[in-house]
Image 1 (cartoon, rainbow, N blue to C red):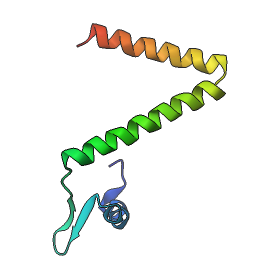
Image 2 (cartoon, rainbow, N blue to C red):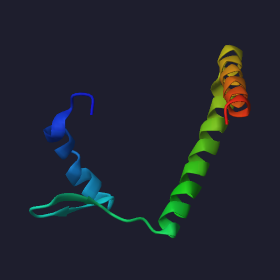
Image 3 (cartoon, rainbow, N blue to C red):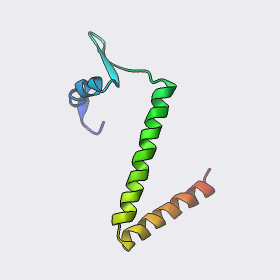
Image 4 (cartoon, rainbow, N blue to C red):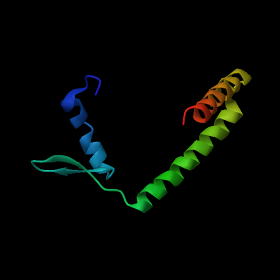
Length: 85
């Protein structure tokens, strides 16, 4: 927890509960809500769309140097995937 302690994490529980990610159970604390296959599928669709938007924005606004850095990191990642299964 990097020194945050339990009290610090408790501050987020109402927010997580309002998002439907956890349930607050009296005398038990927070309980993680189970996710259905549809919940996961819907989340992956949203994530894919956000990643596509991020890519389009990066292409539209990135400098050549920034694109070169991204390409270098991508190449490193692909090398590691091929070398170290």
